[in-house]
Image (cartoon, rainbow, N blue to C red; front, side, top):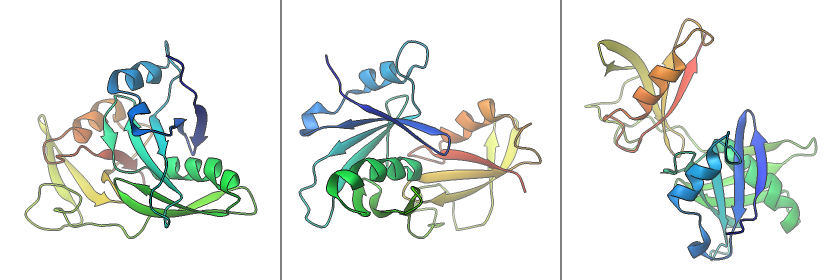
Length: 196
């Protein structure tokens, strides 16, 4: 199978971008996993699949897949990469995009940078989605024998944010996947560690 792609990166996230004319050409889960492997494949954090838009108010429709093949709603850095690829093709400095996380607009700036309007953060547990009885700034989250304190927010897809004394010393490789796949995040979550 011959696959044509573009490799891109934005702020530490790297992507493989497929521009397909037909939804039937979207790579399957196993293909994405194989390609994502940094030792035997191309290696990337996420695959971005560009699809033609049937909406005159949308320039490009895209789907976002994690390296494990799971589909997610949105990725801000991925949206920036898509805009930098699609904007010049369209001769536009503003690119209107749609993913399963909703609509967003990216602007290509004179200095070569791309900004994306991600909308207003949503902290309502039901909308994130995150299982909680009410909205709060911080939630307890049990991981094994530990109880962590997290914040939950949606920017088009679920995010968990943990404040830690040192990002460098945080147990990202253990805590990250445990929070990402926690049952209180029914759609999984992107996990970020924050040092103040």
